[in-house]
Image (cartoon, rainbow, N blue to C red; front, side):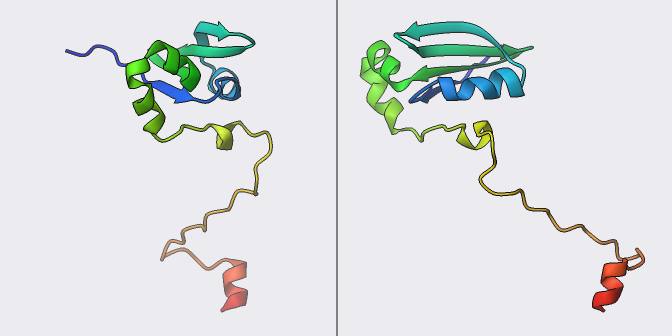
Length: 111
């Protein structure tokens, strides 16, 4: 019986995902493996949730027989969550109108 499963996401660089997991979601960094001035591997944990990241370059060295298959998988990007400014303003979803609700002033003017 499986008691725990932890995904490992492969990325070009780990540093761009740090603010998302640490600051936005409040995870704790439990494992950090440096490689030069960058990170090669990192694990985050919050309660029972855990996720790991490894760079493609590190996987090439650690798992040579499967590194080509790792690179075939779709890339995982956090760019839409980690950018400081949204590229476009969020759109507002239209409000649903109850069939029994009285018309608003705007609806009365357009009728």
